[in-house]
Length: 306
Ligand SMILES: Cc1cc2nc3c(=O)[nH]c(=O)nc-3n(C[C@H](O)[C@H](O)[C@H](O)COP(=O)(O)OP(=O)(O)OC[C@H]3O[C@@H](n4cnc5c(N)ncnc54)[C@H](O)[C@@H]3O)c2cc1C
Ligand code: SF4
Image 1 (cartoon, rainbow, N blue to C red):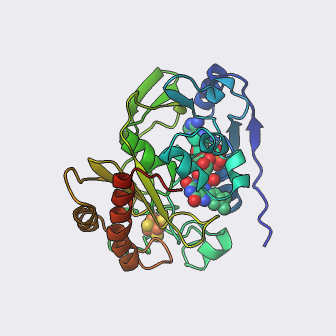
Image 2: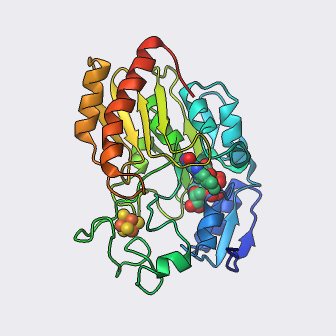
Image 3: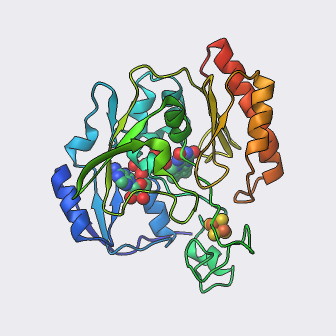
């Protein structure tokens, strides 16, 4: 079925200052970078902003330098940079066509996902709640994953994020109040409806990588070798395992000094995927043990698989 875009005004700033000012002047606006997530979501009527501000012509976001990547760098460019597990993660997102449009910043700010939310308006209407679908669309709705709960458990599903957290990355956000810098893991919160700690008027501008990053091994579990969003994301260092695609924010598990088997067991016990995906939550939980063990084995062998 053809899903037309809703009508909106498009603003195209050509500097970071102009983008920050426009966003402050249009608090109801949505930012768009590559558009590979925002545009399909607008077609599904998950939101219909009257104004969209494009970041595609903001040169400051495209600039990378010593120790940092611009938020507007494409995933294709990250994949080609030979940044080990980070390049592997970028290479595994969607398809090569999408990677050419998709940006690193868009990946870090990606909406959380759920099988009851990422559907057309028509599909969501069949849930019988005035076409709103569920609690994530409408505060008066219910959560179909945990009907007695008050939160949303939609899963954080951005492939580059667990690797960047494992590397110890920080991000810069710019607003009319100026720039601020925070550890990447502090950008995310527990509720799948809000999921970001950033303010609505902040623009993600840069991703900082530490000068002496730890070795990281990365694994992505998915149904097919391309296109599919993750069922599970795992990034491990000698000290910790970062798990994602199982809840609203990535979680970290201390695995310092453990064998791959012990690390897999510790991660298995720490994480509880819910039925936000069509694949069985119980099977995904069991695969945490398997994938963390595999990632630790890869790390000990010194390999970084794609
Ligand atoms: C078929 C398909 C499969 C996909 N599979 C995967 C997958 O497996 N793994 C995965 O991680 N992603 C996947 N994606 C999602 C998406 O392609 C990527 O996450 C991509 O990196 C998003 O980047 P973008 O520039 O296109 O973001 P956009 O769609 O432009 O924006 C995404 C969100 O980020 C916000 N945003 C963008 N840039 C900034 C900024 N600088 N500051 C503040 N907010 C910003 C936007 O407002 C929007 O809310 C898939 C998409 C499709 C269509
Ligand atoms: S977890 Fe619940 S509230 Fe969140 S998107 Fe899914 S069904 Fe909606």
